[in-house]
Length: 360
Image (cartoon, rainbow, N blue to C red; front, side, top):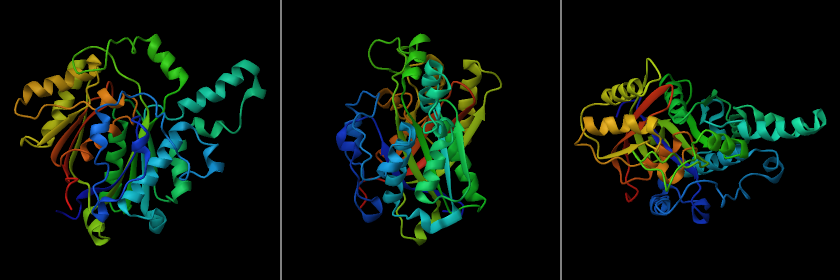
């Protein structure tokens, strides 16, 4: 393992899966298998809202009332990731960064700010809501809450914004600018989003989303936080990594066509090597433009394990790709290939060496 090897030492989740998944978990660094029951619980999930979300005891009441839902999700997920990694973030001062990926960042607050304004005029505009209307509000709240004084970046993109955040965090770590980075994907449901999805036919489906079914996608919300460190730094403080980031690749399509995006995703995967992975997690969601690249990859690599589709369970809006990383860390261990197609922009692929949760 080289000095530039990066490892994920902390995981924190807020998911639309039920009450039992929102309780704090023991740290893997202490030898306790974390989130051991989560994959089974996800198997009975149906996505959508985080109805069991309970931030009490983590977010102080005064701050809680000022946050939008996305920032609340992000705060709790970050708290759990630091706790899971056994790291006090303030101990690193300016040597810790935060990178957030989101599809809906700031949108919920923007609707909450604009609807009263349009109904009642300037008197309806709330100064309490306005600070959350910017996309990087969540990263700002996290910086204040956890003393994150290093560089910060927020990426607003579609289905794989969290992978863009992961790429930036890896760049900062490998350049030596920081010693740790909090990478986080977060999204929240709000009325206008559902109105837009319904108006554009995105919610026209019969049954759950399934790759190749054309059923559409299931909206959801939540947050997934990951603490990323250099391997020697993690070893020096006795942290047991959840996974090693073996490789991360991105390729952009020359044009927005399905064929071009398919070629871009295949090119990103090719960078990771020819050896078949032990497990594969794909981002297909029931939307044809996202399923097509995944189906093409399966045809090109028939020896690969059958692709999994966690978006079928967690929803399309559940971290803008962060749910794919979380699904890998909650898997069976071994070399796990992640493919994160997007309807526009870069197509991402990542290879992780995931530690087994059963490891003592």
